[in-house]
Length: 68
Image (cartoon, rainbow, N blue to C red; front, top):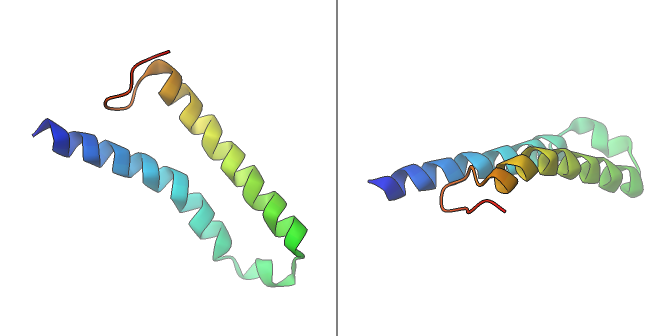
């Protein structure tokens, strides 16, 4: 039963990673932007996601992740 908990936790982490990118790509405001601004905005969102993941990985807070 522990593997179900692990899959749920990793699924939630994946949702936190993919969710903001998905929502940003669905914005109607992107139609009036140039490609470079769209890429830069998505890079900023990806950087904010990494700020969320970095402490989790460093502390080994995720299932089956050993701390550094």
